[in-house]
Figure 1 (cartoon, rainbow, N blue to C red):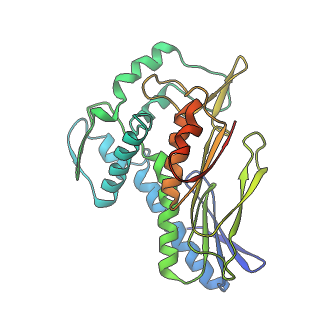
Figure 2 (tube, rainbow, N blue to C red):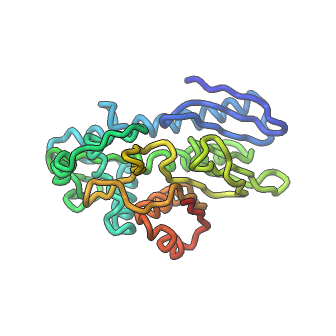
Amino acid sequence: MTVAGQRRGDLFAGLFAAMGGPCEILLEGCDEASALRLVELAAAETRRIEHKLSRYRDDGAVHAINAAGGAPVRVDDETARLLDLAASCHALSGGRFDVTSGILRRAWAFDGGDRLPSRGRVKALLPLVGWEKVAWRHPEITLPAGMEIDLGGLGKEYAADRAAELLAAAAPAAALVNLGGDLRATAPRSDGAAWRVGVEDPGREDHAERILEMKTGGLATSGDARRFLMRDGVRYGHLLNPRTGWPVRGAPRAVTVAAPTCTEAGVLATVAMLHGRDAEAFLAGQGVASWCRR
């Protein structure tokens, strides 16, 4: 496993790659050897979850469910908790957050290009979408043959929380876990100060639109800055309406949410985006700090 590290003033920054991008662990009050050990711990947990939830590996929990051909699959406790969360997200969102909708990627490629799928191709996939078609009774799940689940919309935020929990249990040092922009802070800085984090401007890559402060808890952003396509001057974001198979209309460019955990923040940010023009109205009733950029 490859991790790197460097001093940044009184902090140690540990770096590794996982979840499809760069990851960073900031640690306070650690010598280099201890800090690297903690970063290795966080990296191992992040990669474990990545492997478990990957739909591309043939040795993970998600693959076992998707490859069952309509037969019931008994899952472990961790996977069961994530499936419970998926069911809760489906209910919270009025069906907009649907972990079976990943199969629509067969029609869509949000690579910044201009290729729109035909309506017929999208329509042909819709019978394979719908959490309500799944039989989930802890600890057993049955997918109709041909359907798939994709827990990628929960995985990175869940991994950030798990890594932070392991760090907090392993050492007293305050830590900030950053998995590609999804964050979880274990504790305030030693002097009681907050961690300062930048929120990227959706219109200018690698440019912080604003600086936020967080002492503990999670911060997550959902948006279309990197996953979209453009056709005839119209921008199509990657978040799809599972009922139509087409991108949600009127969604903000990005939504950032602060919540007690990164998982909660990520769910609320994504569900807000899926509400399209009603994103702000949805967030107003959730009791969390949030920022929408249109």
